[in-house]
Amino acid sequence: MTQTRERPAPLTISISEEAVEHVRNFAQQADQPNSHLRVGVKGGGCSGLTYVLDLVDEPSEDDKVLEEHGLQLFVDRKSYVFLAGTILEYSGGLNGKGFVFNNPNAKTTCGCGTSFGV
Image (cartoon, rainbow, N blue to C red; front, side, top):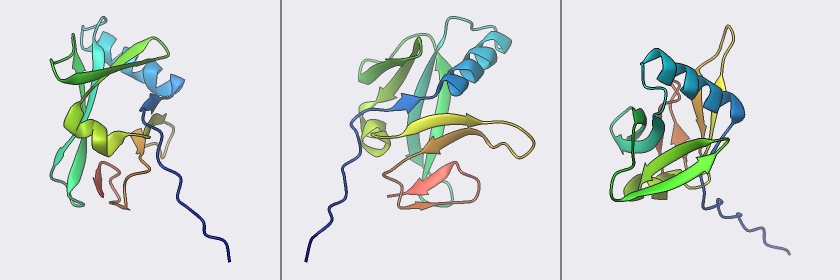
C-alpha cells in the first residue's frame, strides 16, 4: 500500500498579470498611481477569517515584500502564515467576482469568496 502525502503550499504569494492590471487601474482611479498592494487577513467573516486588500505607498516595518509583474505586494508576517501558496487572480465578465484568492490553506470558504477558515 502506498501513502500519498499532501504537498506543502509554496512559501510565496503570487498575483496574476490580469490582477496586477486591475490593481494599477484602481490605483490610478484613486489618484495613487505609485502605490503598492497590501494583502492580509483579519478575523471575521462567515468562515472565521477574511481577506484584506489595500493600496499603500510603502511597507510597514514587519511586512514581507514580494514583487511580481512589476507590482510590489506587502504582507504582514501574521497574515503570511495563512496566505503562503495563495494565487491572487482577477475574475471579470458578467459573473466575475473581482479579486479571487486561490488559497491552498483554506479548509472552508464561504459563497462570497472573501472569507475562509483553516
